[in-house]
Length: 490
Image (cartoon, rainbow, N blue to C red):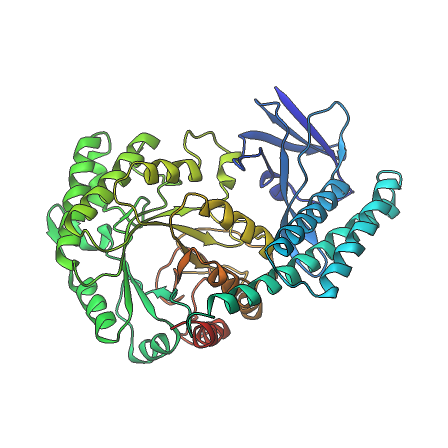
């Protein structure tokens, strides 16, 4: 049994935060582990004994609750002092990324270099102070805060210069910015706002909504949504056809829960019907989503792989030209720290890409800040690094986004996700978009960004994640997305 211990400052993390902590190795795959805190220590037990990085949400002044990582740590009898190791991890990450980007020609302003130097000084001072003293904690906190300041500035420099380089050969970027249209038609006001903001529309083509009974199809909403997109010159992202959760699978399919062959046959029939109906009207097919985190019909991981592979293969055979993607939820794999699974998200994706089924790209779903079932909040530099890691699979990436605008309960949210009280508001949602969406578009391998919840006024997955509030008023985030599209996209 592997064991790692970390000394904590008093009252620094809650029990909920402790349960979001995980360890991963060089492949960034979290290990299943038992996490507990007591006697001023965070104790993590696991079956492996390899060196590891610890990831934990950490409250940082000026940055909120952001997930930080230590450097690579070996197991040892003595505990590590957590604030120092987080400071060491973040400072080292920023220094390494700064060096890497400068090697490829990034022009870095003196302010960034100064903050990196300051963070290094604070880290050194914390390391020489007696562990646990107020001075050691203060210097570690200063190192973390300053390193995060540097990370944000560095990511901003990269974004600005990368977009500028990509636009040398074209006036605007070819990537799309879109939003999911939901399961009902847009009213006239919302439709006008949508057209002023987005260049693509996500049409759900949901198995649950379309096949209301066995071989009983209702295409009316999907027909009208696709025609509306085509009429107004929007690119059409159709799907996910197979969303493997309670919102995506028909209720009647539960009769076949123990009969996978029948489930596969029904899924095949639906995908065939949908692709045949809309072939030639769709710009991107989203065959399946949340395939790595799905909890439906007692499906095994192997069965989810088979369903996904069948959907890709069938879609490609009917529509040989249109790009086909599969969507992966929680791409950091935080959930693996709480349960053991055979297929981490990147490995699952790699298997589908290598199978040569006709998969054109991957979609990464980032529902930021929600727990459980969401993606922990990370700084832009960490997001950039992880997207680069996924890009090594050699196929285009698409990003599906949702970020909250409030922290209180949402009466129409289907997932009971938790958010730190007071941590989110309309301005915080807008600020997140301002910092991260241009970064996503700066990546040459990102071919599109899709906001996955448009309206809070109809049932949706995550609390307050829409761009229109309960009264159907646009949030500040919508105006910002419109300005980003105008500035950078065709």
